[in-house]
Length: 229
Ligand SMILES: Nc1ncnc2c1ncn2[C@@H]1O[C@H](COP(=O)(O)OP(=O)(O)OP(=O)(O)O)[C@@H](O)[C@H]1O
Ligand SMILES: [Mg+2]
Image (cartoon, rainbow, N blue to C red; front, side):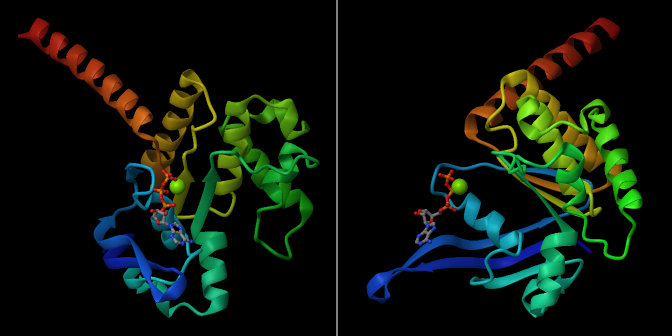
């Protein structure tokens, strides 16, 4: 069974004077755990619309979205809330960290576990922050970090409830190219090693950059094969 399955998903925005604007026309696609998927497309092609629907932020669509075989539309309010908080981890282009909180608190605040001691919550957050190379920075405030470090904190926050799906909206949009590669490697690792479905929206330029890297890699592979032959 697919982790996430979209069938005949159509999104119409209602405009004034009873007209409508079709932003998504019959989307049919399914995703498995462990996949890293990029959503690319021109400005206005419906990427944010699709991410909002998948993230449970917009329920006004037709067609079906199934999570582990269960239709998102069958969820009651509380279930939908749990879905947004626990099943999905959101990562944003602009990090969305809370400026007056420490790095540690920015991560623990997202933890939905109730009746759990502060020390247990902190230990869980520190474990994830350590994995992302941020152990030395947990007492700092977001303004005291570099862009790549901020995005790693946001990734730690997205991972804290152990979600099955990570939705990343241009996670590298505010980063330079080297930091971009680091963040993409981290997201790839999360898909590969933690068996999560990672769906990210990236811009066309980044996609071309990734293709270039792939081309270089293939050329190198081809060279080494030719040497071997
Ligand atoms: N609330 C709304 N009411 C009416 N039309 C909308 C609304 N939100 C988005 N649209 C239209 O739906 C289409 C898809 O918008 P969406 O924001 O999903 O595009 P996008 O692919 O994310 O673009 P970008 O790359 O510029 O962020 C656009 O043509 C947009 O004008
Ligand atoms: Mg958009």
